[in-house]
Image (cartoon, rainbow, N blue to C red; front, side):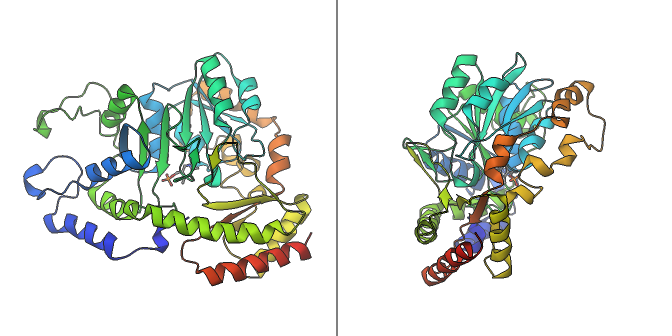
Length: 397
Ligand SMILES: *Cc1c(COP(=O)(O)O)cnc(C)c1O
């Protein structure tokens, strides 16, 4: 996945443009910039990439999720349905708004189970946030149907799925709003950065203002801008956008390498009858950022994960035992360990987590191994790795 692995002269050139004229901020200072508008140029490029009418760059993927929710009016006391398997950023972004994350089971797609979503809906539910984990996606038709039926927003966290498609559409562009991250380990990187995409003009205008102190960005004189509503600072800098601009131009190349490396490993593992791959919904095309597969049970997954580590197969994760990506180890959420007071409404809203169990999610995550697909591997390296992985799995079933 990581764009930082293939990093060089193009990125340096774009960054130097910014350093040469000294305007490190994305807004204003028109006279000093010698025509360089890196954030604007990146937004324009991303509109094509994501086939989306509007793109708002922000400072991170976490900020993107929070800004997307805020832009659609989600806030204090609202419930947002999210999956048990994602990065901790998902619930942080919801909590930041004083809203309540409602965690529900995933299915064999490793994304939200539409049936679990439907049974978690209450009169407080405002949005469903599907996380397109590890380069693939949930059943978007079913999720869209649930949202339409109950008049809920559908938000896509596509931070790990740049380049994935569903019925020909880029992941992130299917829901009401889509969110991306360009942090250091994502498919393309800005160092730090993120984007909100939407076809809804109001949500876009809200995102544009909200992510820059509520400034309305109207007119040529930045000092004369007014504040139609309260905002905060989730701006990206020109330096970060410059890096992203070089990276996004190489996205087709990155996706090609990812697909080649993914396919070699997938084919080698297909020879092991006990290996079962994640479900990709009909009409879906994975971005190939990760290869995900299931082993027969928790014990074999633990053994294989350990054997990979001790035999130099890096970048493979057994999320069941990790506290970054799966509910089982998220004690800081379950116990609401916050530096500052949290409202009683949110505490009450989260109290379900103390007793709730997630057998269905456990059954998938316990058996799942998730292998990051790197861009820097040569074809020979991938072939050797793929063979070794298949052998290690067979030896540790
Ligand atoms: C990386 C990631 C985020 C957060 O992105 P940052 O840019 O690191 O804040 C959110 N959701 C998912 C699924 C991610 O992988």
